Image 1 (tube, rainbow, N blue to C red):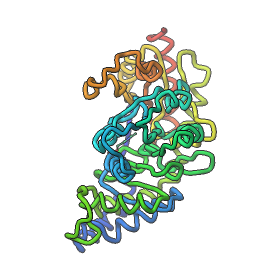
Image 2 (image 1 turned 90 degrees about the vertical axis):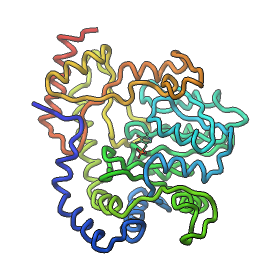
Image 3 (image 1 turned 180 degrees about the vertical axis):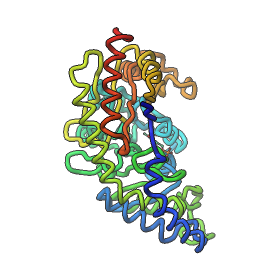
Length: 372
Ligand SMILES: *Cc1c(COP(=O)(O)O)cnc(C)c1O
């Protein structure tokens, strides 16, 4: 059996006629930038999240950067986040003029460890960006308690967490603002690049609206220097079609995760992903931890099962951050996760038979080839 890590082709076969019908209208109207399709998607996504404002932008990275600029980040301001995220989180901080400060993660969830936050706060700290990693919400109550104590803002990196919930609230409505990515492989993916900002703060919404469009509220009248960071109509239309399917897809992902959790429970040598108390994850990724990970990965590949690593090298050990002088051992929990983590295939189109094959094969591999 061949099991790809991700299968977007099947999803697109089912939606092709619907998406092409909208794209045909857009081609005929030549309204590629802004307009009805973008506004419709923004309204739909805000409603789906329960957010007051949604601003569609060019990418999740732009969403993060625009939020930080809208919050008035200044040179040298410190922003706390985790080392085991996609580099976009920290690129946005640095590119908005801030200084990245890492804290280690919780060993059970690999999400930000609120117990380590206080020690990372300095007089220059302005805010915290918890990442809802793999679609599992961060421990927001504990993060926000620290933020309130020190007068910091909290911005959610919800790029992997469309429709995830935390204590009855959807991702994107918990912090001051949130960034979403619609990169094709995300749970809600465009047919190209797109992202969004959600917030309840009208001032942030107004500023992001300017920033994404060269600082203009009226064409060629610029209130400030902004960016070319808009979401185009073709992406917005495809996203609206997919948004109508998203609740069903989340349900499928949760069912798949339950089956994985059930079939792999009590298997010696496997640490299963934990859910944050009060969280309802959407399983963008299903990430287990095993010893001899590279060997397990190779053996699974030989049996036709594609897996992936999210992420193989924590950010503080990347060449891009060599100037931070954070040697191995600086964030031991994140580093341990990076050594052991393995993302198994999970997507709505996956079948129960495929999941059973992955689990049976994984158990065989652990027993025969990779005994620690
Ligand atoms: C995907 C992702 C981003 C960046 O999103 P893009 O749309 O690719 O710019 C940021 N943070 C996390 C955690 C992500 O997974």
